Image (cartoon, rainbow, N blue to C red; front, side, top):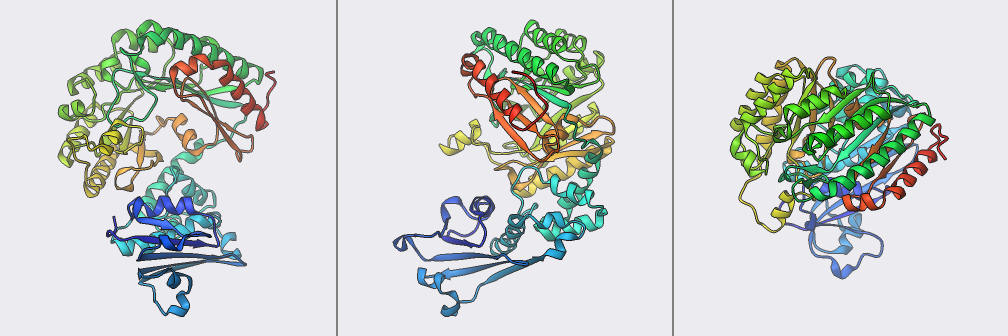
Amino acid sequence: MCENKKLWVKITGIDMELEAWELIRLFFDEDLFTFIKEGFNEESFIPGAFLDVNVINGEEWVCKVDYYNNIARLESINNLDASGIKPQYTCKRQVSADDMKKPGGKLLKSKKILAGACIADVLSKVAGKLLPYGSLTGIRPVKLAMLCVEDGLDKSSAVKHLVKTTSMNEEKASLLYDIAVVERPFINIDPKSVHLYIGIPFCKSRCLYCSFTSYPMERYRSLIPAFLHALEKEIRFVKKMVSQNNLKIKSVYIGGGTPTALENSNLNRVLQLVNESFDIDNAEFTVEAGRPDTITYEKLKTMKMNNVTRISINPQTMNATTLKAIGRNHTPEEIVEKFKMSRDMGFNNINMDIIAGLPNEDENMFRHTLEWIERLDPESLTVHTMAIKRASLLHENMECRNYHYNLTPDKTVEAMIKVARQVAINMGMRPYYLYRQKNILANLENTGYAKVGYECIYNIHTMEEVQSIIAMGPDSISKFVSPDGKKIKRTCNVKEVAQYIDRIDEMLERKRAVYESINLPHDIC
């Protein structure tokens, strides 16, 4: 973060205060910068630094960003030319109509990204800190690389264009391009196909970093019968929707929480209902068996008998002390045992999740985890970067300073991500999808790696938003994409399980209305 000095920010010619706020907070503490808007109270002004973002819209779009280290009076900001004050740092970019017609020109239409790149360039000089993704604060940066691929740019040209447009570094631009190339064959908009997501909001315990709707099984066991009844009702509603519109199921993804936290009989009930309700003979079918302490021989057999094709066993780390610290009540040995049990049951498409930057972990501990992953040799590996999520216990503990662990330094997290990428390559994997989160350490990313032929199509389509997803269960989000792939609408179910049970009819009606509103084929009234 920058020095303890107030930063005043003025933006003219473009409406991007929210995007600028997301970017500037990566350099300045949130309480140290303020936007100057019309009607600003002069009495609130105190001496500090000034960031002037000025956009001129015309045949040639121009953005100029100036940083002034010391401004003593508000009058100086309003009369910079007359005051004779010179900026310490300046960045200027301009784009013509002809530039936007060239290959890669679609990127240049996003004026907020270009203006953000100017802001990032200037503030990196002020702070001595380079952001790996430059001006990008969104969660789906691969979309930008996809535009380059679709315009026919080769890797070298695409990387240069991404770097120039967004101020990201070459390593990240290269990674995004590689993923876009892998994803491209899977990006086929089919209005007659949908993905299904089913959320099971129960788990053995709540992990320190988790922000999902996930309730400890033992404490909320009494809600499960009513929850399953409501979920069954919703699945049958979606069955009707799918049948009446002659839709094809491209994939089924059951997540949570931890679906395998359910007792075997209840897990079987859900899986049987999915098989009875939908034609999934040719569909990818994933169940998150994320917590090894929820996996049993009987549950693996149940999943196998119910046509599950892909499971995820998520150690997060293979270090016992860290597992205990983050609230996971299983051992590294149990991870190995359950992985081998899954192999013996015939599962030949297993994903594993790990997290770089867990509290109190150093690079050697992370390498230890990777060594075990390499020995187990799963078909895919998802490498998450630790993120401080607002709804997590970790964030709550940090807010009240009730914690006894250290966040991993940025350089260490960067090293972890690099070694994970190399280990994935050693296992014959390639990066196939990527997303980012707010408050992610070192401003990095989460990357999915897979061996060729084992890419999870649900993950790709979720990130690229090219296929409708009908979601069932509390806190699940449906995403409806119009037939031309240009319009996306989302509908989110209520977060509390008890509310979900009580209001299932209202939720179903909302889902029907959203489904109809974007003109997908429908006849479900």
